[in-house]
Image 1 (tube, rainbow, N blue to C red):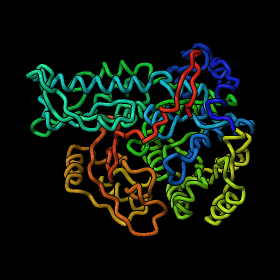
Image 2 (tube, helix red, strand yellow; image 1 turned 90 degrees about the horizontal axis):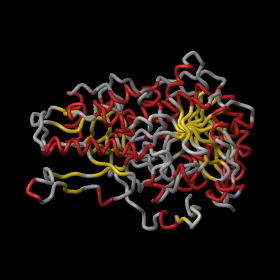
Image 3 (cartoon, rainbow, N blue to C red; image 1 turned 90 degrees about the vertical axis):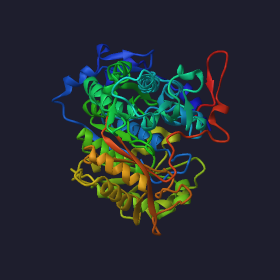
Image 4 (cartoon, rainbow, N blue to C red; image 1 turned 60 degrees about the horizontal axis):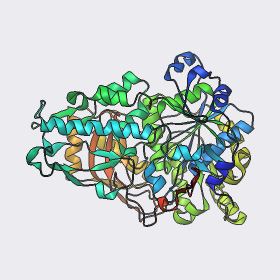
Length: 539
């Protein structure tokens, strides 16, 4: 069996100008990054104001194992399958983070004959969007500490700064640090600090939820970096670097255009995690893809309890979008860990939004046909349509039946609805998600979390949607508890903070971390490059 990188390196890749032309774009509409990658100018959106939006299809999943279940592969494969049926299709997915790429999960460009190209470039630096986000974020960090050092007004309480630094790498040693050491003050004010991974940055969330550069600048200006000594919030616009931060993101805000192994056009843009952020690619890329195609296939990170819930309640709400169908990815591996009750819960959760769903059983190479058929029968007994797909080995051809079912679902006009009303209190929103989506019996708010939520509401942010940070490998907040909600369990809320720029309240549960660590055997140990610049070991 060929590896992903071998398949990618052997694939016939078309010049990016041809891909742009296939979706109605001219050379003047794109900004090439070499032969096979281009950014698409935001200005073209004005040309498509009166163009009807294409159908929006979400690919989500059951609760995954730590290695993932092929959701991105299914998303890419489905887009290719739709193209094989003669449909005008596009794919819109997130950009890979270097943290997982060098850590446990590897890259995020799909797999086998259902992946996006050029695979190595996309997984390693790509067009520099992650670096731009990292730099913009850390500019604000540096400005905050300079503001503190120079004793500028408004005066910041050094014990109440909430804006951490960021880096696009799994590095547990940076979770908690001390800065400003020694030098009798010339190195700045000594205080506790820490790092988050770039995918958890509020700047990343803002990039993914802004529709224009002016909106990007406004949202960045609303980022809360800390409080003064009277507990009044201090924002990025008070520090004065929101303009410079936006300038650093001038190119990053333009969607990145690439292609699949089979030549289907893809936007790969933005990359927030779903367990600690909202887990979706940019609104700009998704909206533009819907203007340029009849079917846009997108994904949301991890299982439906995290990715789909946030896609519906946050992205669709803020973007005023209505999805037409959802695909729930199921695998024999995840089923062996979590069981059929887990699949049932995710199907029920998607149904709460009144979005029609079809189950896609993603075949792995060593799966037996008998096991897959048994799994298909069990899923069918849950009252949903089920298709076995083989996107990795067969590309789009491995999911034609799924594509046909999705097209049928899209012909309906679903009565899409949100799970909660924004007028509910923050606690009520959290309890609604925890009980209806996770299957929890109750939610326990720590005294610190209760205090923080009350303060957030008193500051006028009570009507924002909530973004719950939770482990992705369990419906509970304990990663050691697999399966479905058979027994009563409690979701434990430890803290909360408002992402005033992004436009949601982040609620932290369990022992969730915003800076992951590398595993015992990091994927980086297998990656190498030869004298000719050929990369190996990337997956």
